[in-house]
Length: 457
Image 1 (cartoon, one colour):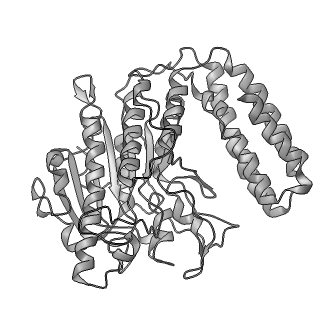
Image 2 (tube, helix red, strand yellow; image 1 turned 60 degrees about the horizontal axis):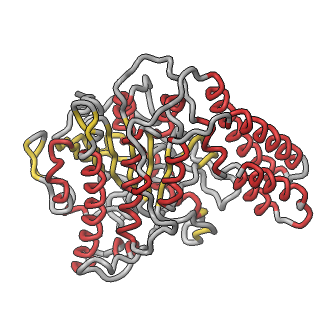
Image 3 (cartoon, one colour; image 1 turned 30 degrees about the vertical axis):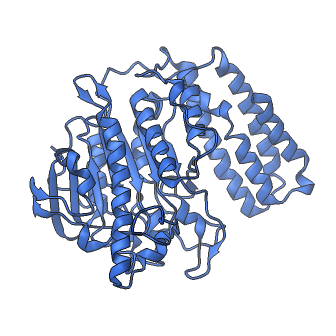
């Protein structure tokens, strides 16, 4: 595997004259995505005192919700779940339903792309056709990951169902790439998501079965890849040099992980065995529900084994046209149905699609709740965000976003409540509170003004 990775990059360098810049850079990126890189965090620092482990996941649903079927009745702990949220009845005491939060920074530009890439950053992305991507921030999941990156083999896990969309949406003048990412390591660094459950499992499995003596070999190969990439950089245009700079920055992050590996005193050990019997099929399933639930299984497995403590998942890219005719009573695609124009039949179908997504959220919560950990469960030690970057797919408004959080985060979250705030309360206030619960001592996040009252226990 190591020789294949090295050969791939060397072949790209040697073939510079016959490859397009785009293909060349994709090839270089592919070389650094091969499995040998995943071993670089297998032996992590263990000198810190034992602390309760908190996990964080964010599940993103595209295209908003049917508003009149979303919000619960009642306030505080005295509330009744709405029709769309009924699949969460068994998790009522583990749940926070949050009303009147908005993402002001996404109240510009187009209907979807700004609200997708800005969902976890609470920043305004640059309008771009694809060359100068910039979200102008770091997503909150990556702030959390930065705190615990040295404690697990995989600092964070980015998952989804749809591959990256390419090209320009000429209706709004944005590259579709923006609609494919919610996790950003930096303003110009969207994190690629894995869409094949089998490959996710293999990453987790490799992390749980570290190879003796692999660190030195990985260091030598990484040095060679860096040398070749730097030589390649000298032959690129200024625009592609900028992209290569971002690529090299990611490599430097891997160098730092490898340095921690070499300095580690005690090897990391999974908190639960990784059973090969749970390995997904080689190809991602064609059935959407099965595909999604396999991804939920991988999130649960990653948290149970402590292979990572931070994960994001996209049910679909922005403007997802996923056909939901597999649901009784639904015919047609998600995006088209969300543009209901107050047609009662489309609204009915829209609500069924929303409810299906909530059911998948409940599926993950049940998996985590069924995993004992000490005198509690993995769900008790987690906080699982669910939401969309817009309220109503017909109006594209980022006001009163549909936002849920489940799990007590080791007792840090005051769950079992429906909390209603003043109109246009910053979504970033919730993220600041969740970062606090995760253990991050951030004074602010994006446009936050304070920690969200009532959320922290």
